[in-house]
Image (tube, rainbow, N blue to C red; front, side, top):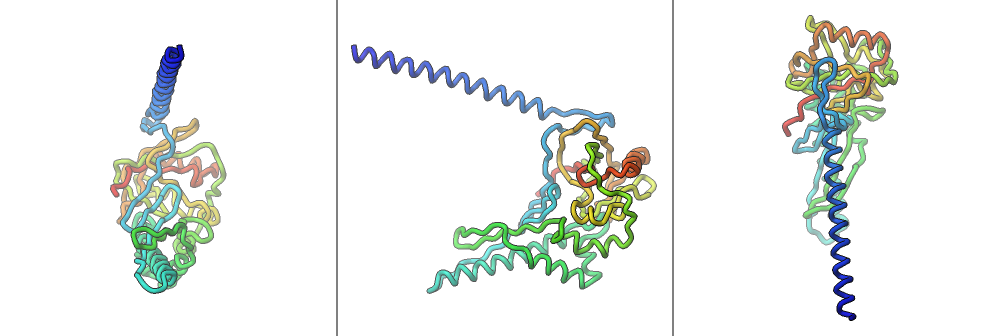
Amino acid sequence: MGKQFIKVTIGLGWYFLFLLSLFLITILFSSSAFAGTIAEQITNTSGIVVTQSAVGPLIEVTPYGEINWTDGYVIAYGKGKISRGLNKDVCVCMAERTAILDARSRAFQMIEKINLDGDITVKDFVSKDSRLFYRLKGLIARVKPLKQYVQAGFYNVEMKIPFYGVYGIEVVFLSSYVKSNNKRIKGLSTDDRIIIDARGTGLKPSLFVKVKDQTGKNVYSAKDVDMAYLQDKGMVQYVTSTTMQPGDVSVKALKADGRQNGNIVISSSDAAIFMQMDKDSVLSKDTVLVIMDPPIN
């Protein structure tokens, strides 16, 4: 009798386990179907197809670290070998110092290669004024390690240098680069956004992007944005995909130009859309998005 009871109990246990498995499989497939629906592509009134998903970050990965163009910062890696000595603490301390100096050096090398605008790099601009060179060096020297760890006999450090804010990269160049400012655009909050589809143009991201029409006339540039807002938020947000929202306006970039391929050229009719939103004072970093091809890292 006892053995029969045990067999029945085990049988019921396997039965309930089977039902539970079916339930979990059903949930899994339902979630996949829902995710597939969310990731569907939609076409707006301008005929531009944009993936309806969360914002896809534009991140350039280099041997020295990474550049996040969506959130606006540089991550630099540094390392120092922990030598073998009588005093382990001293050896670790020396390796830490080496790693920090290495990270700062690599951060400087990465930032030098960033496009200031579509025509010049940070290195080009800094070479014209030694004061900017030392200001950039000083800014990087103030940065504290974001992450520190020991691995495989090396002391590793990660440093984060923001694009914007009081201690941001843009601050170093702002007053020298933007010599005259129209202050047309105040960066007021709005739910309406202009999305520039620059995929397939070979556009390279830059700190101070320039948008022009087919005749070369300026449509949107750093001198048109309020200085305080420019320092705090920047001009645009670079992404690889974004979620379309009601009220969004999309324009198609015709091409990228400039020595560094960092300027955006749009049609004259699309330029009128910019000018209208400019007139309403609603353009800001959160309302101008540039969709680009994912970088080949």
